[in-house]
Length: 152
Image 1 (cartoon, rainbow, N blue to C red):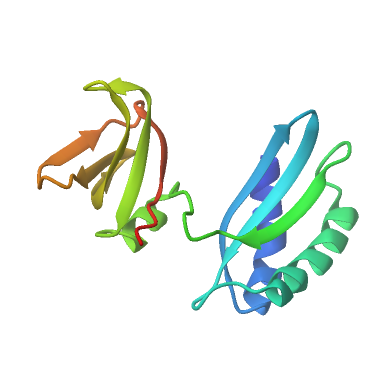
Image 2 (cartoon, one colour):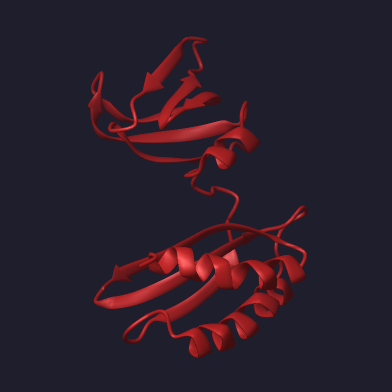
């Protein structure tokens, strides 16, 4: 049986593309005792509320019809955000050379948060170029989160 996120990805993709966007990610998570189904979309120039609505309404109907999720949940369709997390190989490829923040599960050299330019991604291992010009590679099992780092 497919995971909820895989089923929702297949259901959402046509609606996302029809809205002129791309599908960034789908999450099905439990927070504060409630389930949330989050569909993150992206679009050149940013995502607006009309695009979110253009995906949300027909997707909600398709989810009701397909009924892939037992129990109640809240559907949210939103932009991937300016500080979006990078999870898939294609995310890392698209943002090579950009500023990122890497958070680790355990301290590495006394720190759990690192900032630098995304220099590489290989099977879950992430390499960034630190501000001092050195490269730091984090193994897949060390990395808790990689996201775009907003620098003003």
